[in-house]
Amino acid sequence: MDCDGYPRIPMPLMCTAFVPGQIDAAVAGISDPDSRTIATAEALYFRGQATPAAETARPYLDATDPALRYSACLICGYASLSLNRIADARRCL
Picture 1 (tube, rainbow, N blue to C red):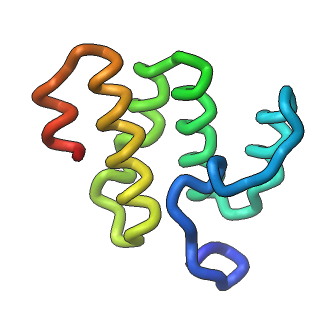
Picture 2: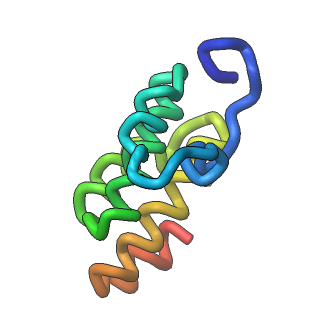
């Protein structure tokens, strides 16, 4: 559950409609701090910053909330592929 009592959704930024060029405002508008952190990692990955994206998402790989864990797996997995870290990608995906 997020801070408003609703179930979290995986990949919250991808599930958010926003005006092109307003990605930072979209991330800032996510009220739940954990979902906002995952959205920050998504934004970093979309901007081509695979290393900071993975570092931001990595703490959620063992999260008890499935949406946070699934999101972290996707972000870390694809970031690892982008960085040619195939063994890391396999562990995440």
